[in-house]
Every structure is written in structure tokens, then in C-alpha cells.
Amino acid sequence: MARTAIQPQGLPDPRPRYTHGWRVNDTIYVAGQLATDAQGQLVGPNDIRAQTRQAFQNIARVLEAAGSSLRDVVKLTVFITDMRLREGYHEARQEFFPTDPPASTLVQVVALAVPGALIEIEAIASIG
Image 1 (cartoon, rainbow, N blue to C red):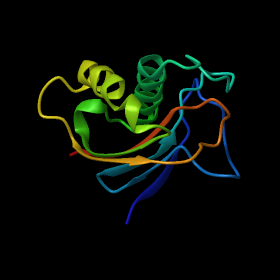
Image 2: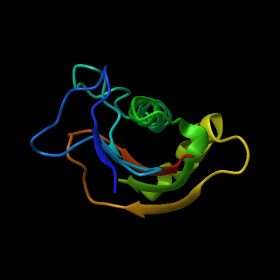
Image 3: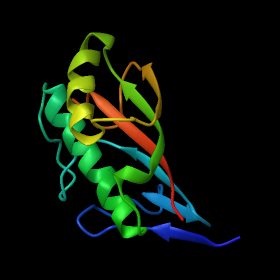
Image 4: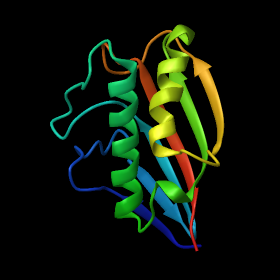
């Protein structure tokens, strides 16, 4: 089994706490991505659309570093702090997955690791 840690350029290195992603054979597992920029600062305070876009951009960076892209995503798990933000999330997700979106789970949580974060998204992609 081929197993490779993924640390993309443009994202802070979170190790040893966790790794942004792992490629295991032809499957890529992307850790939950928040709406943070290259300096680890929250993007889009109180704006679910901006935070969703940034989280997907971060996922795309991890996937690209592994030789993949968003078009290879087969599963998303989404953690959101308020279900009333669901429509804004869906609108922003449509920009990245206009047709045939991945299988998805949406879960409401009390809080996320970064104060002010409204959403965290993890992904699984299959390539090959």
C-alpha cells in the first residue's frame, strides 16, 4: 500500500497536530478545511458563502498537491455551526460542483476550531 502525506504550498503546515491530506494508492483523504488563508487567518467573517469558497479553495490546493482536483471528489463531510446557513453553503458549493455533486453529509456542530468559523469541509477523492 502506497501512503503519502500531503502538505500543499500556500497552506500553513499543521503537523504534528494533523496532516492536510493523505494519498493512499488512488484515494485522497483531505482533512477538514476551514476558511483560512495562507497565514492561518479566517476569511469572510460572518459570511457563509465566502467561508465556503475559501474552504473549497483550500481543499483544491490539497488535492492539486496530490495530483488530483475537485472533479475527483466523491464524498464531502460538511460541518456547519447553524443550519440556517445551509442555503448559502449550497449556493457557494454550486460554483465548485455545478453538476453531479459528490455524495455529501451535512452536520450541525456547536463550534469549530477557529473562533468565528462557520463551516469546515473534509473530502475524499478517487483518482486513477
